[in-house]
Image (cartoon, rainbow, N blue to C red; front, side):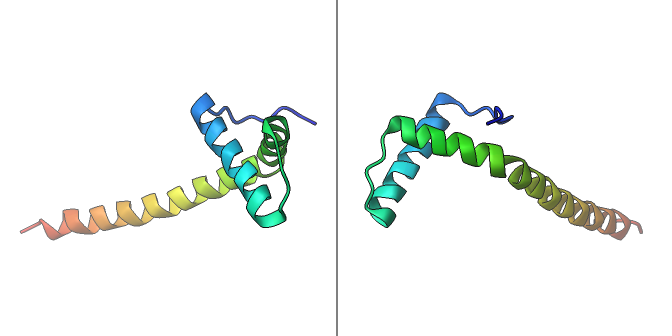
Length: 80
């Protein structure tokens, strides 16, 4: 398995691992430990991290484009 490119703070990693442990307990009635949750987190970061990151960049670009267009309209509305 390749090393994921996304670095998480220890707090972020701990929170995500707790969420994974909770999910497995509630949804699958499976007891999962810290090592198992870390393995699953690393797997999903490797497999999905880049796609999610790129989608977020695309969303930001759309948002930014829309807001720049709005600013340009507002700018020309100020002309007398």
